[in-house]
Image (cartoon, each protein chain N blue to C red):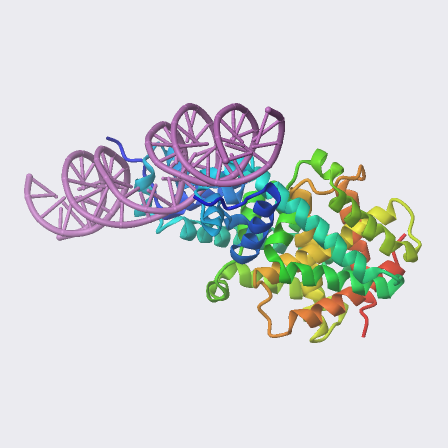
Length: 188
Length: 188
DNA sequence: GCAAATACCTAGTGGCTCTAGGAAGCGCGG
DNA sequence: CCGCGCTTCCTAGAGCCACTAGGTATTTGC
């Protein structure tokens, strides 16, 4: 019989697409195998187990997120950079919910440390904050506030958690403005 | 044989405790049944299915969260209320991670509308914001920013996602101060 | 003290992850 | 062009899970 031509990368990429469709928590090797017209056991030649597959999606997603944000903030600084960063972040979370969830899932810190994508995301954040002239530990605190706010917004919006009629995109832009104000007037 | 004396409420409460131990995503009816010294099939007399059980935990948790926050902000206003609200929120998420995750899980909006706990949480938020003198739609935007920031922080901290040496509790307090600044100087 | 309600049971289905070991395609040296 | 070996993909099966059907035993209410 003709082979499906699977590789670790193709499997991971398909898994990421599947995650965007059904949710990161709901991917199964069985469903993934079905998509390739293959039995689930066959995937174990390419992927160690489900956990490793999830890890692969997370690395892939962290990289793609860093790409998007990097492109968005290029050539901008201060408020402009903050707005571009925030919008690129939210758009990624909305367009690729499975990948986004993967990128934010609990991951072995040792692996995070070796990941290019995660490193670039941290770098993008600190680069964007540079214009605000903060110093440690305020810099870390500010980065954590931004990350929390963006991630929280993405999670709640993704869950359909904003019940009010006001459109989330408008609230988001205003929230980013408010965060800009907070950064400019950082308490100290 | 002696009966275990199960009721829908006892089952839900035990499930909430189990969720706090193993994580909301990892609860199983089988494990829950084991805890009662009962077969998994027996639980279906008290709970319709796993999804309903999760819903029950979510309602319970939303109620408990509202209790805590309500008690924390009682008699406070403005910055004091914001700080008390934020700390109570974070403490709940850290002490009862399974319940907290349940309270933030995707839930049928129609059910949320009928839930006392969820309603009280919204109420607590708007009451706490009252002192800042915002009007719609700024009020909604501010509420969403706070909710996003608190939730995001709780999720990331719960995942062990703050790699830096700086203690999360310190970053959190500073972030809350920054949010206070943003609320006082709300852009408009 | 009896009948109805119900708490808990056994048995079984189907989906999932993952392992062990076998067969079939492909790429390489001759 | 041919066989050798590597890898891909397979079948078979164990164990855990959610959930259903239908039976037995214990309470509760009369």
